[in-house]
Image (cartoon, rainbow, N blue to C red; front, side):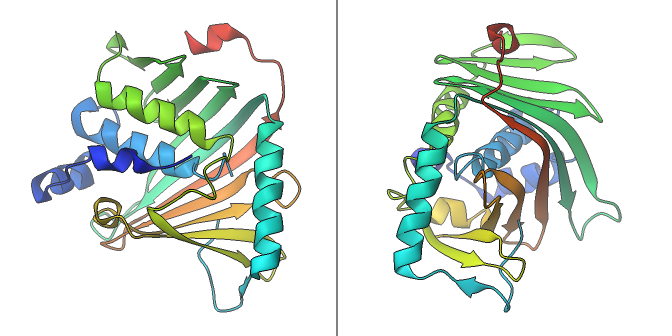
Length: 243
């Protein structure tokens, strides 16, 4: 999916400072919720596909890159649903300990996504056929923010992988690491994205093209690592999950 939704972010220095602080408190919707949604989006960027590139990584040739992108798109177009567990870890020089959140995601084609934090505090964002639900310990809010709705549509669109060839906001490079795993490295060129992130690297499972791990490195050196486990594609998911 294209990530032109970042034009929504009129990022100011004040907002940036608030986000850095409030990312430690995931239930504050006004700022940290936007940060978590940003992370959700970037995580799903290559169709729910980590490791930063190292000197031992070998860049994929143009010919092989074309074949790889085609394979990714094909796999994701065949995916009717996706479920996974995730652990999200935020490391920062400002804190002695990493901030760790755990949760699960569920996606059902064509337009339903549930991203759920289960610990240390519960929070769920549901995108369903153009509607947005935010669930916290304080209750459920319907369509809490127009921006979230726009983000939700774009997040969902990333899952089919159709915009891998149409991305003007990143310089995209494909590598193969020493373990033989494909790694997609995204270097932001959009100035708004560059205000947040230095790079995003996504390690692909070579069989399913789903994410094993994603690392989002911020301009200040902080990093968010998301590790996926227990991934299940094309399982039967009840529509009740998205209500």
